[in-house]
Length: 183
Image (cartoon, rainbow, N blue to C red; front, side, top):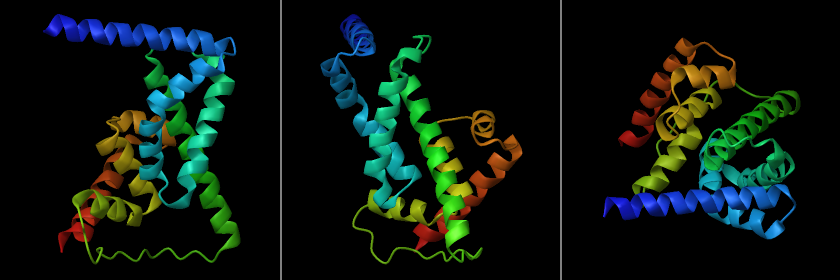
């Protein structure tokens, strides 16, 4: 039974490799297969990191970027891993641009209003809403660490911060989530 599962994984990896090679040569159908097999994960990541109405545009931008940079994929990591890194980097840059835009064009207050959602039809909806209420730094680190599995050292490298800052922001995020989800 295990050998069948291992064989299926190997076949899937070969299909992805074949589609990447075809897409690099301009095969739109191969790229569409790659898109369809990875769009759900990228969309979920964008929803967690951005929230709101920016998700569709961000996902589209990510796949445009992947199409443009596909020839740089070296194959040292799995395609899904490479794509995930491209997506995270794009989403982080998008959040930074949004923060700069807001600081220039709005009167931003530093105090965050934290309130628990009035109703929680299910845990996922409640969690999405609560994560959306987190301040940017705490939100990014919570998503990258607790949801995507990055280590504090990796997050520090991505965000240009100290690993200790990553740890303290994660602690802050978890405390605030407890408050938001508590009652």
